[in-house]
Picture 1 (cartoon, rainbow, N blue to C red):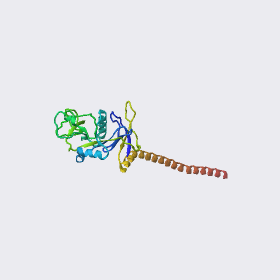
Picture 2: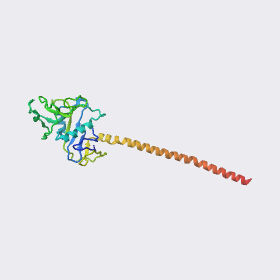
Picture 3: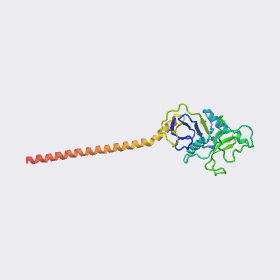
Picture 4: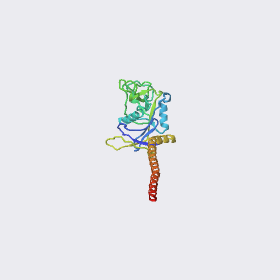
Length: 267
């Protein structure tokens, strides 16, 4: 199932409608697709290797970040996903950065991290005093909005190395969609200075989700149509009854007058 919205590459995500577990794709076929996998139940969260396999099983990879613009884009998506009222709050996200080998504690440790999808990106967004190295070899993007800020500020969106067997949410990254289905819902737009709007397609498989996302938004419109139709019918029926009552009365008065005239003539 597809519906479209627009976000700006390199600027905050202003207007969007998508949910945990949905794939978000740019319709221009130039930018990657993403999926935010959030699990409310802690027992459902996964290790780094499990997250990596989950992304690869769908033809993607754990998230690699090429630059600050892509980092800000992911932050915007997470802000939308976890906005108040969604029931989603604390929970870090695995990204595809990790290092192999035994725990190193030397100053060279930060240079040992590599992206699991083979990206050569040197972009990093470590939290203050990270990475701590040692036995922590896999990297998460912080998402702890209710935690008290630390030395590096809030624990939001910066990176932290963690033990690879810890359980977290994760973010997948995919190649651009080749043949996205035509959008079936309204397109939203963001202000994108210096460039044209870029449509984004949010995908989800299955017939039942299709029906849900198509039918539910139309309920208010259907109710409005039914109310308007009912009001119109009531007014028409009321006018029809008024005409029906008036006609016999007028007929009776006419006959009565005619009768009185005829009586007078006979006398």
